[in-house]
Amino acid sequence: MILSSSKFRWLLRIGFALALIGTLYFGIRVAMGAFYWSDPAHQDQAIEGWMPLGYVGRSWNVPREVMVEIAGIPPEGRPRRSLEMIARDENIPLPVLLERIRAGIARWREQPHD
Image 1: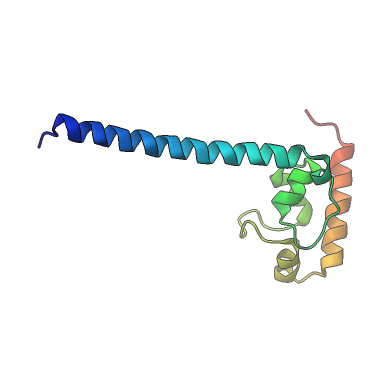
Image 2: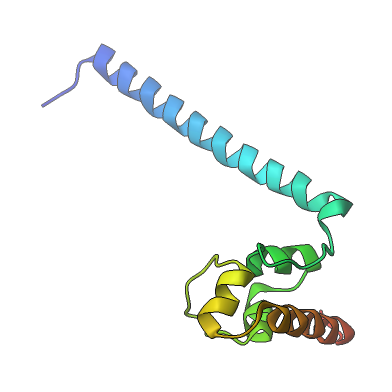
């Protein structure tokens, strides 16, 4: 089946519009993330139970795999759990987990990194 010239143009327009919408969506997400994390109020935030490990890592500029190691959880575990959920799942008190994370971040920051 061969498309007529007008149908082909409409398909191209729809494809272009979808590509433009996708580009705008992801571009806005990247820009908002950059603005959020460049704000000094979001850097080195006090660590709280509602925060996921990735959030703490971004705030404290520590790689995610290091955060997983510091928390002492298996890397293949469920992603995006809050620290409260991690403490509950690992059967440790939240204050113990928070202190472990604070101490681990301090140790990691003392080491030289490239």
